Length: 79
Image (cartoon, rainbow, N blue to C red):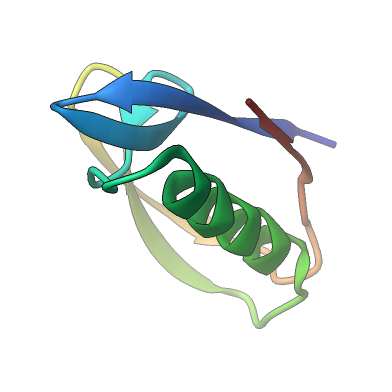
């Protein structure tokens, strides 16, 4: 099982969450970034349907793959 860690960090004049080297949009406060990261982390735990997904890696490359709706990662929010 994989693990995703969302880290709250200062970014681009505000706050963001970062996972695997990729930043979220910028939020005006630490609390707002943490609330967004917590929401996203919770959404990662919800089972879904098997479907195609597109995601960007830390090097800015996009990938397409099939995601099993029952294969959910462990999530954590730091900061």
